[in-house]
Length: 95
Image 1: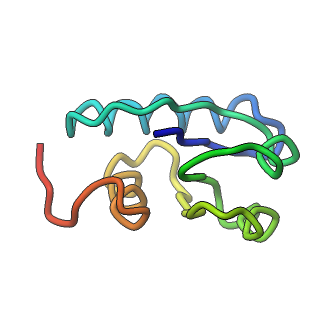
Image 2: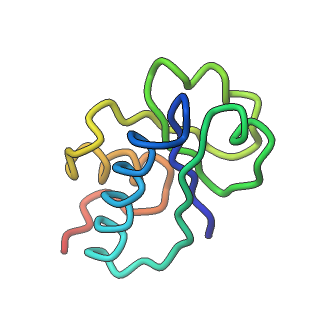
């Protein structure tokens, strides 16, 4: 499974989100490749799921994979909910 974390420039915010997505996945025993990148690169990348913020989601709606929104990149609860929305985690799953 390949997950992209996306921000405007693909540097700081998407890297923070990537690290927290990896932590949540590890907590739930799920293995995935998580990459961070800028919105322009993500628009043509192949992924199973894209995680981004509300400001960029419209730039990625054309992708064939689910695009989910996380507004607080350090809130593991919000990240968990986004992964559940993308059907990576099952609702009600606990660590």
